[in-house]
Image (cartoon, rainbow, N blue to C red; front, side, top):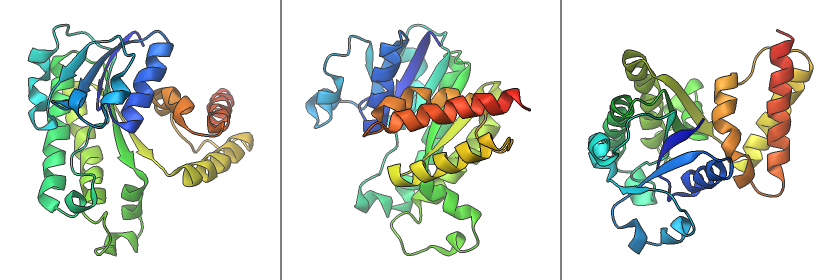
Length: 232
C-alpha cells in the first residue's frame, strides 16, 4: 500500500496502525473528531507529520469534499461512537453507528479507495452461539448486534460499490494469544481453516502495538499462514 485514509486515527488502535504504517513508508491521511487537538487524545497526534482532517463520525459523508485527493489504496475505519458505559447501553447510539459506518463505505467509494477495512470486536462473535444470542443483560447487548450488522450490511454495500471489504474482530490480548496458538497449530498440521491472506495483510500493521513482544507471535501466525497457502 502507498496511501491510505485512517478514520479514528487518534484512538488507541487507530493511532497504533497510523504510526506503524508511517514507519513502513505509507502515506496516511488521518481523520479525527472535531476538537481532538483539545481533548485527552491530543497527545496521540504528537509527532505525526501527516494531513489531519477533522470530521465528526455523524458527518462521514463529507469526507470526499474534505479530502482533496481521490485515489487511495485503503480506508481504515476505527471510529465508533458510544464506547463508554452509559452510551454502550443506549441502543439509539449503537444503531446510529450502523448508518455512519455504511456511509463511510460510500465515502470510501467516492474517494476511489480500493479496500475498506473495518474493526469489529470479540463480543460480536458471541452471536454465533445459541447462548450468546440470549445475552440481554450485559453492557454489550446493543454494541455486539450493531457491530455484526455493520459487518453484514457493510459487506453488501462494499460489494455494490466494487470495494474489497475486510472486517477484523479484535480480541482481548489473552484471547488473541489463545486463538493465534490454535491457528498456528492448525497451519502446521496443513489445516486450511484460518484467516484469509487479505485479512492478515490488513492486520500486519497492528503487530507492534501489542504488548510484551506479542507481535513476535503475531508474525509467526503470518508466516504460518503463508506456509499453509503454499500447501493448498
